[in-house]
Length: 111
Length: 108
Image (cartoon, rainbow over all chains, first blue to last red; front, side, top):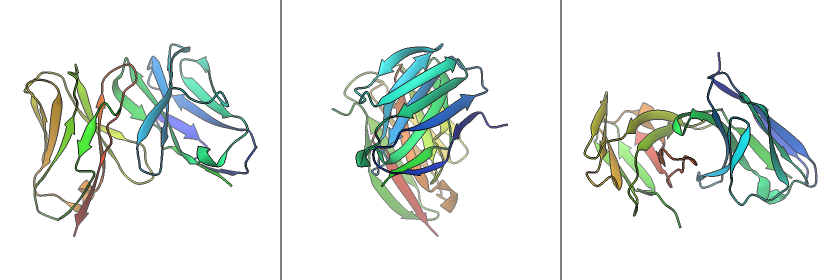
């Protein structure tokens, strides 16, 4: 059983399109995150949710909208995709910031 | 300003050698986590250190938390090709803030 699963693993799309990435965790964790990893491998937090409530929004353009229908899911919707959005996006979950578990990542390429 | 600086940024060594990588901050932190990320995968937690001066061992990996809780190191003994990867330290805070990473390559 995969602890944190995100789909799709690869996403290639044209500029201006809208796309979604889904994430689910079966660990019973209360906190979920979205991170962006750039070409230099730096992992930067985008959003953090605790019990479905947004607690961290790190100066991310409002084209990015997370949605948490329940504690086990945190989806990421991106509107009007731009070239600079190309990166690997990771979903993760933890219990109060301790011992995070990550998904396999979604490699987004905007052309 | 990056809260956690890791050094070196890149490291390539021969199989069998020893190495140490570092994670430093100008601030005191309550706990620190080390992760390893392999290509095409997400980071995987290796260890959490909580107490100043703490030393934890995981087979050939030794993790140390500085006495002042502002720095940490990871020492690998007799490196193997399977140790190749990106090593990340992270603060155990609300944001789970990650360091800049060390890309380690073990050459057969």
